[in-house]
Amino acid sequence: MTRARLLSLLVALVSATGLVATGCATLPSSSSPQVIDTFAPSSPDLSVPTPVPDQEPDLLVRDFIKAAAIADQRHAAARQFLTPEAAEQWDDSAETTIVLRADLSAEGGRSADRAEYTLRGEKVGTLDPGGIFRDDTGQVEVTIGLTRADGQWRIDELPPGVVIERTEFFSTYAQRELFFLSGSADSLVPDPRWTAADRTDLGYSLVNLLATGPRPALDGAVLSRVPDSVSVRPTESADDGDQPGTTIDFTGLPVLSSQATTQFAAQVVWTLARSDVPGPYRLERDGAPLDERYAEGWTTEDVRDFDPYPPVEPMRHALTAADGLVRLDAGGARPADGPWSAVRGGRSAAMSYDGRTVAVVAGDAQTGPRRLMVGALDAEPVEAISARTVAGPTFHPVDGRVWALVDGSRLVRIGVGGDDPSIQEMDARPILELGSGVSDLRIDRSGARMAVVADGKVFIGALSDETGQPLAGSFRQIGRTLGETVTSVAWRDRSTVVVGRDTAEAPVVTISVDGAITEPLSQRNISGPVTDVAAAGREVYAVDQRSLLRLDTAAETSDRYWREINGLAAIRAEPVVAG
Image 1 (cartoon, helix red, strand yellow):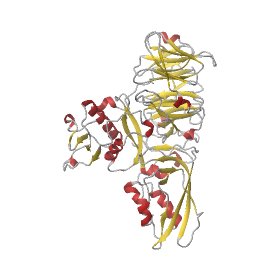
Image 2 (image 1 turned 180 degrees about the vertical axis):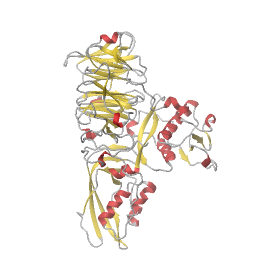
Image 3 (image 1 turned 90 degrees about the vertical axis):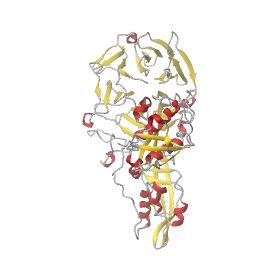
Image 4 (image 1 turned 30 degrees about the vertical axis):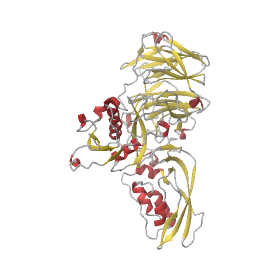
């Protein structure tokens, strides 16, 4: 199933067409119209427009716009609508602009052999030549000139780049994921890219994209064992067509150590596997196996330690204001019977990835000081910081330290262990520049990215692979159509965040890290505003006006509703998950 499904747009869902989505995109069938639109390819069988004899110029331009969504062979389908000279000169490699709808007007006038149209549209995103989507807004205005050639209208003037409507974009493009190494080189970081949906050379094109390196926002945050000197070529073996799987032959690849070979294979194998390129994957260097142990091909099992989407257990703890930390099991909630049960006034919490350490923000009064408590799950909590406000906490997956933004200005990371937690001041400027009111922050499972909520908006940025500091210039807003309604954020997995909102409609939404895909989750049995969210495996958790709820996102659509947790019904509680 492709993960390319939709582009978020701030319009009302008022027709069945607007609710169409392939695969996993879901909206509750019993809900009222929402503020988030859901779009996907309208048909798997795409008809390629071609010039029609004696076609009127405005209709020809409209068919050209549709054909421009097909990027194969340097937009060969679209070039049919151009004069030979314009077809040769048109620079289609510049930025691709995606618009909500292309409106045409003949403001330039029309004569017997000359016509000029102005294309206007509301920008919803751009796509650069590397397949990087950028959530964007604004107005687009393009002038297109036509002339009669051999009695037929053809385009002879148009600016560089491509403008396509969103419906054609989703009919012809699919989202894939490249994978790069985290700073510790033992984990993979997804880098979503948009490529032609039906490419026959998908494996080769993805590996060549890997060699170009990560998107600019990840520069300095990730590593790669696929050097830019490498290229791939189709296998010349006559028998390869009879072998199952895929052969990728690399040229320009230096000799790698055993560890670097495994890391290289992890990047390539998971990139191909997640895009449904068939395995096993025979990785070769100049016609010879990259590693003789895998001459018959690599599989994801051979690089299972690098699984970018490892299985995650459901939430095992929750935090209550009156009873501190409570334990969750099949029977519901029960007292944890440990030192953390005595922590009163709990407001937010996080668990380390090994499940051994807890961080809790507590404070009894609505406007009183906040205490950040840290420590082992079976040991006495230790107060690390007292402040007016605390955004977080969140655990780093590699070093196990706790991060928080305190008093709206100080970004700290706290080493847990011993009698006195160690506190290190971090560079908060890349985060503070996002807005005056930072209310939440979360580090992802790879340790390469951070999600931040500032002034009701959500941002995704990167952490340095050397210092761990937030990287200036790497933070970009996603989910722009949500306005300033976001209250909290959590990582659903390495490529998707879940956000809570202070609205009654679509109070919980998921967004892809590149901002291209937005999905409202079920609205059944949940009442916004939502003040906190979390995720663990197939379950998403939210705190609404009444209590802590959980949603099984893998359940049948008819059964996908928010449920209270036994023992916590009508009790104010906060989710406690890893991260």
